[in-house]
Structure formats: structure tokens, C-alpha cells
Image (tube, rainbow, N blue to C red; front, side):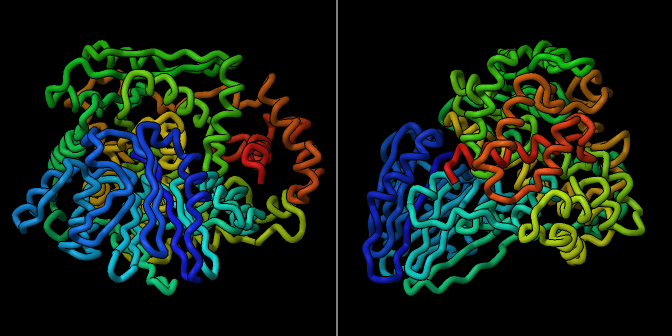
Length: 590
């Protein structure tokens, strides 16, 4: 887990090494252990390293393989790198390090671009061919690792974070109207290739981008996710599906122990993270470090789920850490968390993950986390209505969209509103083949789009703010493929994630399974009271924000008059969403 960056020139000008150094410098929190720059002709690569696999300098990046004529930078972890290394050694390749970065370079040389099909892991990379000048850039199947880029006529620049990319300078930082429409309607999800800024784009997941020396580019998707059982699975019983899911999860959790440093677990007390702990214990892990966080309650809403995480910690005798956060500490952390965001993210638990990561990073450098289970195993409340929906787009939009087109017109000034852009996007996604049932269409868009640009991005940004590598076993691509084949009825059973609950009953105490669905609670943000409300009020009424002419003053004033009366269908604050955008623009000086 690291930070990567680079500049490719097509105009005969040399790469700006000084600017590249500034870009990598901004990513020091992602890779606090080491850094480096490398220039090869018209290509320059930069890297910040977090030492997880092969702690020696032999695995330093940018990595140069002079024998093969390849250089590269890599962010992530390849869990099957030892198996791939053995295959490559059998082909006669000689290794100078024990890291997974070298496996990428030699794998590319041996198998060409299709080497990515052999990778099980999370990754964003750039590989430069010395002799041809060709460059290959790629991002993993589920978009766990980010990659932002900027294109000009004479250059292509990329980085692991949007704020770092801006250090190149000469990037259009004006707001993108289409991205704003996604942000305010599609529950703050801005899908690739858009970002909130016109001059910055992001590489879609499961995508390879090949760049020729003259700047010619070609892009292709290397993985798709079909839904529904295969012919040989059509007659499987619920028990047989359960065993297949259990076996896949055991393997996914075991894979994510690959490291030369200890691996802990973020333990919320819900089914997903509790199952990870249980499977690790089942695999023989002892003395496992687990971490939970809690906030002050607001009214009747509890700010922690310690009663459930304690059950798991006691049952499996983990080295457990409870982290309690009061409001006085959380508000300053909100400002810092916004500074760590590559893009505006309105989920209340961003500050929770930020503070949790800060504390966890004092104990371990790698953790497993439960993100992705709700999206792939149908844990959210909007899935059952999608089972046999007559109008899939309308049913999904009513449950998921923050605002309809009429309210978007009330929110945005003329020139910013872009009709039903998000709704059209959903309709186009639903119309693609490979997911015929309405519920499968919803599960697919949530897995391929929402998951990547909400919870996955949130976890990456908040953990990497402290050089903490988060691994997500539910997003092992083989688990995701299997989950897509499990019949939807088995997934929505028992109040959601039925098949996963079946697996859990054999591993963890029933008290954390048969309980109301929980969330990462930050009540003071959800209800915008006290100092949080005042901070948001200052942001949305500031001269700098209002002068942008984005949001209509009358709409903001209506929300300010009664913030708790204006909540999205997914229980988010409409006022906080506007305030978060204002605070993000302020924090990043754009």
C-alpha cells in the first residue's frame, strides 16, 4: 500500500521532476517509510512506500528491471504473488527481491497485458517499457486502489490522490457540472471517469490504459461481473450455497494475511467484521489485535456498538482496543478528515474511520475490514423491493437518490443543473446485459459503481491518511463473482445477507447475527447539532462559497431553518452534503 505518481511527455519537453517531487511529497502519509523518483526518456515515475511485503530496499520503488527493460510503480498488494513467482521462476525468470512489485514487472513481460487476469489483490500501477516507450496503467477489478489523472495535449500526469495530483500545477480546478449533479442526486457518488474537478479524471476499475510514445491512448476493461447461477449450479440447495460461500470467505481471509508485519481487524461488532475475526480464529490466528470506535450518543441514538464488539473480542480472546471519541475531539478531526479526502464524501462515518485509523496505526500497519458485504450479499433495505420491481429504475431511484430532478432545480443555479443525468446513468447501467432481474441490476450497479466511489474510497482515504493498509476480504474478486451467482432470494433472506448469516452461524455467536442492522454511528453529524451545525452554517454562508453561484441561497436558507427536517431517503443530512462540499473546496484551495 503506497502512493504512486508519474508524468509522461509527448511534446519533447522534459518531465518536471520538481513538480513530481511535490506530488509524491503530498502522499507521504500514504507511504511514510521511503520514497523515490525515476526518469526514463519522456517518462518520470514517483513513489511513496509503506513497507508491508519485503521490508528491505531490494523492493524499493520506482522499481527498475534492467534485464527486462521495464520500470514501474505499484500501489496495493498481490495476495497470490508467491504462487505467481513460482510460475515465473519455472519459466526461467530470476528475482532480486521478495516483493510483489517485481512479480508485476516479470508477469507483464511473460504474459503481456493479460497478466492482470492472474492477479488476486488490490492494485494501481504504471509500467514503462524502456525500448518502445509504451506505458501501461491499470486499476484492480473492484477499484480498491485509486488512480487520478490529468490530460493535456503534451502530457499525461497521474497520482494516487487528487490533492497530490494538483501539485503538478496547470490543472483546471473549476467544478464539473456533471459531477455536481451526481454528487447532489446520486448520494454523493461520482462515478469514474468523472471527478468534482473538470481537469481531473479517474481511471475506472478493472481497466487498462495503454499509452503510446506519441500520446495515443487505448482503454479496455479486463473484467466483468455476470449475475445468476451457472448451469452447473442451477440445482444447488441453500446448504450447498452456504458451504461454497464459507469456503470462499475462508480463502479470502487467509489470503489477506500475506504480510511481513502483523495484521489486525477493524471490528465494528456487526456480522461482517465479526465473521472475519471468527474465520481468522478458525484458521489458527491467536493474539489478534482488534479495534472498535464509539462516539457520544445524541438523544436516543447510541454512538457506539461496543456491546457487540465486546462479545466477539471475548469469544475469540482478541487483543481488543476500544476507542472512545467525544465531540470536542471529533469536530477538529472532521476538518482533518476532509483534508484527507480525494473527493467530497458525505458519509458520516468518514470522521469515524479517520480517527479509528489514527489510533490503529499506532499498533499495526495492516488491518482487515468488512466493507463490501452489504453490496455483494444484499444487506441494504432497498434490495427486497427490487426483487420483482415493475420499474427497476424508478424503484431504485426512490430508495437511493437524494433529490429528484425538481429538487435539483431548486438547489442549483441555472447553468449547473443537468436534468436527470444520474437517472439516465442508472438506466443505461441497468440496460446492460449480464444482470436480467431488477434486483441483480441494483446489486451490480452498487458493486461496480456505488461501492467503489463511496465505502471503498472512504476506507482508502481515511486509512492511508495514517499509512494504514486496509484489506477487504469481501471484495476478493472470487468472492464477488460467487456472490453474484448466489440466487437473490438467498441473499435477501432473513432481513438481508441471509446466506452470509448462514455462514456466520457456524462461526460466531448468534447475538451479533440476530440483531438490528447497525451502522458506523456518528450521531452528532447525522443530526447536525451544536458545533457541527455551526461549522456547516459558516461554510454554506461564507462569501467564498456563495460567490461561486452554485447553490441557490433560498434553498440553503430553508435547510438552515430546520436542518433535521431535510433528510435524504438514506438518512443523510441535505445541509451537511452542501456544507461538506463547501468545506472540501476550502480545505483543498480550489
